[in-house]
Length: 204
Length: 245
Image 1 (cartoon, each protein chain N blue to C red):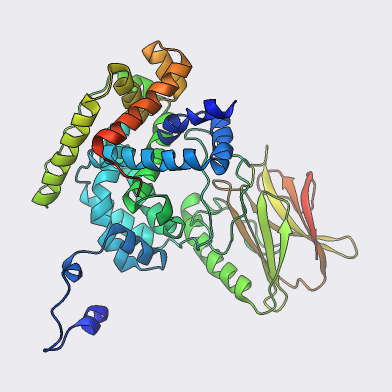
Image 2: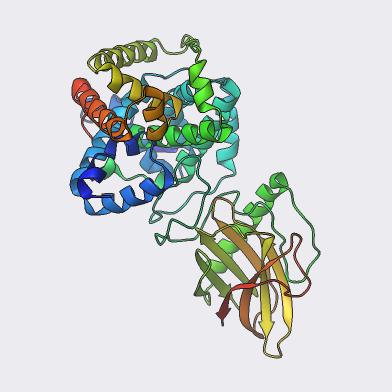
């Protein structure tokens, strides 16, 4: 657009810095979205829609419900962009925290999250036809998560899976795993800390 | 609950696994505990990695629907702060943080009637979306009016902004509890004790926005009552709050 044209270099200019060739980060785009740029939102969308939908589908296990929940979250990204606080984490973390919150909210309202989990079926992972790189990143991410999950004790892993992917409260986790509530709390926390360290996650 | 027990809730908090009472208690604790805030931030970053690994190409219709909805959805302004209700729990007046208000959710009011003493048309959710947008742009104009005056309203965290020049006022708020039964209705009270019926409204996710139009120069007080569904011609229900002008 005109913004691009304005930036066009004339002969004799210094070569562009490599950073200019990189797509803007989700944080930069989200900042522009907060200032009302729908163009920035369209560029942000492909970065966040896959994880948002994937998480919603994983939790809700129904493509229609997942699509509804994803739509709500993605519109909220637009609506609430000004609330994003970089000091509290990355843009992706902010978006996916909302996606988890919304999906769990939905699954609890459906009132059948425990039943759903018990007859959990594996959701087919459709191949990403569009972007091979995204596919590779996803496989890499999945492998990292699998390996990190493998470092947990069975109780830690089950507690986190029931809470994160199935929307169990920690009370429900303690009932399902037949462990005291206090144990459920600490297993969830210890397990997440171990996951964090295994994946080398930094907060921001 | 002791502080050390509260520290142990970081994990369950991040997984949205606390119940409502614990959530309130933990969020209070979080405001005072930098260690827990740091741990929560790092655990959110961890769960975001779990989420990223679930990524899957969404249906193309999702993009179409999202873009269409975004095109007609106003944004909140900077300064608004987010507080959250526990998933699955009813939205209540638990959240008390002050929020700067100009623009609110697209679906601020599921059911609204605009106009002083006007016709009593009910609008469905669907129609309300468009109506709400018209109302929001009107609210923006009221707030931006040179003579706009703002009053705090004791209804959740609400404000009434009025402009005599425009002959209009907007009531907007968050954290507004659902009326136990019926709907809220706004009334314009005059010095002689007569009441002009204003719009009825109900909170949507705790948020309300409603606009009244008319000559407000003779209005001495605005009151909010709870009325039966459909509203009343004269105040009949219990008074919720009032604002002297």
